[in-house]
Structures are given as C-alpha cells and as structure tokens.
Length: 83
Image 1 (tube, helix red, strand yellow):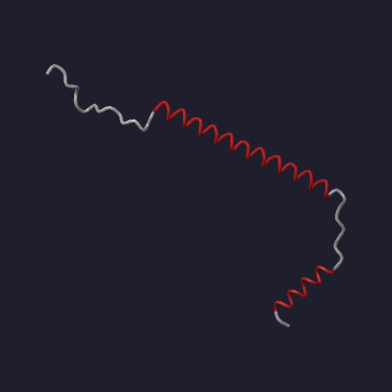
Image 2 (cartoon, one colour; image 1 turned 90 degrees about the vertical axis):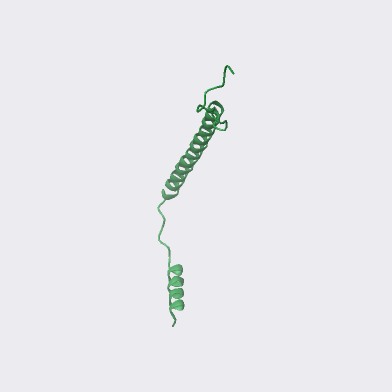
C-alpha cells in the first residue's frame, strides 16, 4: 500500500464516521460574530477612505498655497537700478 492510498483511506474513514452533534446555539453565535466582523470591516474601510480623501484635500490645499512648481525668485544679485 503506497503512502497516498493510505492517506486516502484514512480520509475516507474519517469522512464516513458519524459526525459529532453541533451545539444548538453555535449558529446564532456564528451569525452574531460574523455580523460584528462585517460591521467592523465596513467601518474600517469607510475610515480609510475618509482619511485618504482628507489627505488628498490637504495636499491640494497645500499645493495651491505653496505652489511648489513655481521657481523661487533669485536673491543672489540685487536688482539693477540707476543706470
């Protein structure tokens, strides 16, 4: 008997055995916990999008005020006056 056929026989034996009874309140607990997990994930996702939106707005406001794409005026030579 090869190793794979022995494993397959063990799995078949386990699947054919009668399964233990499931507690009655297990379904209600699973539904309650699953609902709680979904609400937490939804809240976390909404919070993430809100933070991302706030960061984008803050960056746009900063960029419009600071204008980092404009070259700063040169301060190395004084302006020429009185020629």
